[in-house]
Image 1 (cartoon, rainbow, N blue to C red):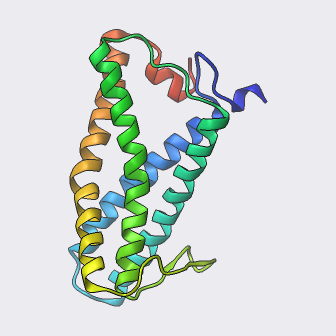
Image 2: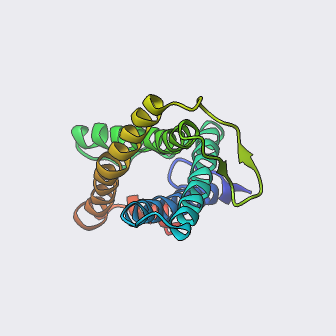
Length: 182
C-alpha cells in the first residue's frame, strides 16, 4: 500500500496516475476544442462537442479527486532550487489546479446558459449550472476561451519547462519522481 501514497521523496501511484491522465486529457481537450470550434455547424461537430463536454467532466472529477488526495497524501517537497523558482513552481501548480476547476465549470456554465445538456457519455447528465442567459453564456465563453487558449497553454509550458530544467540542468529527481523512477 505504501506505493500508492506520496512520501517525502516520491510521488505515489495515485498522484502519478492522476497527473498523467489529467495531462493527456487536458492536452487532448485543448486540441479538440481548437479543432471543433473551427468546423462548420453539423451533426459531427455537435458530437465532438458532446465528447469534449464528457472529457471535461472527467477532468473535473480528476481534479476533485486530486485535491482530496492531496489532503490525504501531501506532495513531496519541491527539490532544492532558487527561491524564485520554488515560488514560481508553487504558483504554476496552484494556477494549474485552479484552471483545472475553471475550465470544466466555465464550459458547463456556457452549455447551461445556452440551454444545452452536459452529459458524461450518456451515463449521466449534470444539472444546469446556471439559468439560460445569453449574458452569462458570453461571460462563461470568454473565461473558457481565455483559460483554454492562453492561460492553460502558458502554464503547461512553464510546468514542462520547469520539469525539463530540473532534469537536464539541475540533474535532480524532479521528473523521475513523477515518472515513478526515483
